[in-house]
Amino acid sequence: MPICSDGGIVHDYHITLALAMGADFIMLGRYFARFDESPTKRVNVNGSYMKEYWGEGSARARNWQRYDMGGDKKLSFEEGVDSFVPYAGSLKDNVNLTLSKVRSTMCNCGALTIPELQEKAKITLVSSTSIVEGGAHDVMLRDKR
Image (cartoon, rainbow, N blue to C red; front, side, top):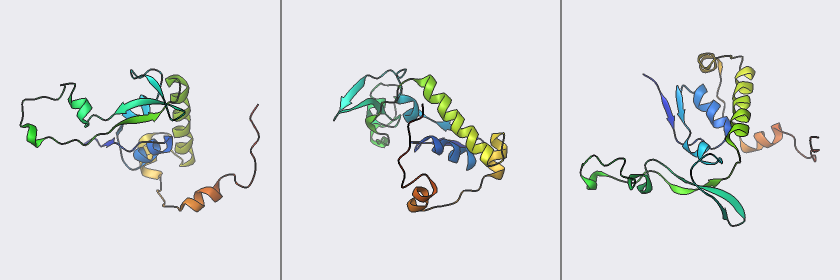
């Protein structure tokens, strides 16, 4: 039976984690909502550009009447969000970068395919301090030119 990772994908590495942990496919509504190509307007919220985003389980999505099957309204509850996500520019540039990150992590695990990733990846819990110490720190990075 196929496994869907639905919700919680915020950063690129979350996609690779979901795949490594057994997901066959991933819901990426929040991911795609950030781009120019999504149908919502870009708005300025407290000095930052954002895009509107609402989850499929939100009252806003249900108000589109896509989900009205004539059932008892008392049995319905809101489980999605109605919010803003940071604006990220064009889809093409971002998708290519995301896919590069996924491929890079797969290669670091010795995997060329998703089934190989699921077999070879080892998920390890690390502290936030380990993440900081593992990256470039105590230096000022130069601009890439």
